[in-house]
View 1 (cartoon, rainbow, N blue to C red):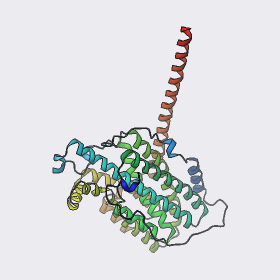
View 2: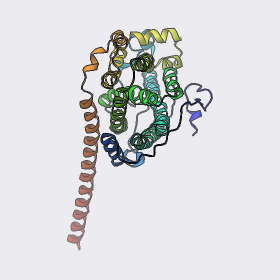
View 3: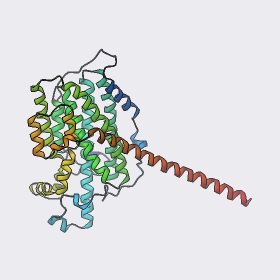
View 4: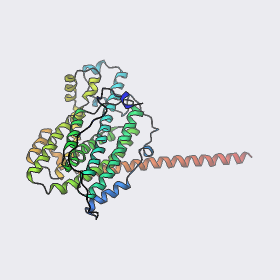
Length: 372
């Protein structure tokens, strides 16, 4: 079935064209340059995987509770609308909330794929080009699996959120090569990691847990790549140039703070926009979620050298300044570890099942021999 038939709302023109600026850069220096980035490139090659084979697509998904979403996390919970909803209505709401979330993940991954390809084109150093080539493949795989989850398991897709679209457009239109890093590797990837992690750590549904854990294993490398490349480059910039980057970060963070509210879902249930926005703003879960969304971004921004007074004031306004002292390396290490643990449990279960089948076959053979 074509995706256009699955959209819960009119997505508009199915093709979005973003005019691109900047130059394609070639490097004739083929010697090893930055050992850390080349080591990350090797890791990127070693960690490639197939979304068809690594994910257990045979797992069932309850369309009315695909993520095990607690009632308290839904913006309508406790409102007059919630009191009038039947159990089926609440199941439909959970379905649409999950479809909206994973749709934004899908659109964001396509944006990440395009931005990674842009970095291959525009980065001045060959080591950065090498790594970005592996990331482009990673992002293609992520878009593939999120698209499959939406098509095969949920059957509902939402258009790209307006704020996410704006940030992607601003990132791609900028002619400066480092802005693709900053917009995608630090802001959008950092936000995605936090959103993925919250669902991964709270869902009791095995299929979305697998998908998110394995995607996060890749994304941890991507954020590490952006940190290394930008930290080196930003040491060379003037104060005026750094302030321009900080302004971009401030604008992007405010956009993303408003990104994952899900107002579109409530509108799709017939609730007027102003009322839907009010419910979202009053949601205690949303306030907690917003803060978590910046748990990867703020320490990364500080680490790469963007920590001017205006940026810090913006983070005070958002209530996230203290996140700048978070241990980002530990978070990324945990992201990779959790995926490996999931693999170990799955392989152990498969091995136990195979051993059981062999034992059963041996027992059947012995029983048959005893009868003859």
